[in-house]
Image 1 (cartoon, one colour):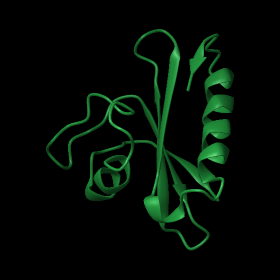
Image 2: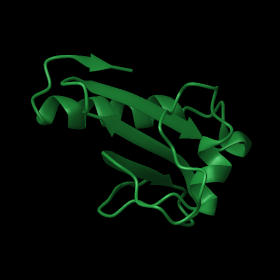
Image 3: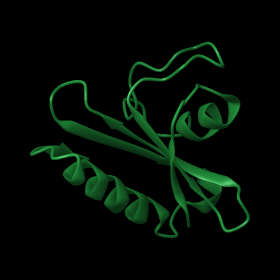
Length: 102
């Protein structure tokens, strides 16, 4: 499954659908209005057919790397979250954050 960094992330319908199904408090500071730019580092996971099946966020605003992921409900339980979290941990360490919170 490809995991792609979003260069100019915006709060859109697809993010709202997937991230909105994550446990409350997993993502903070998200806008109510669609098409607004998002802070920090956003990533998306796509299926082999190009459908978005997950989003991840590396929040670096507090001096550490706080990781959040959300996987579409229809593909949960298939190991995608574990794969995504491992990828974000690797990115955070490459950015030289000594503390990574997942």
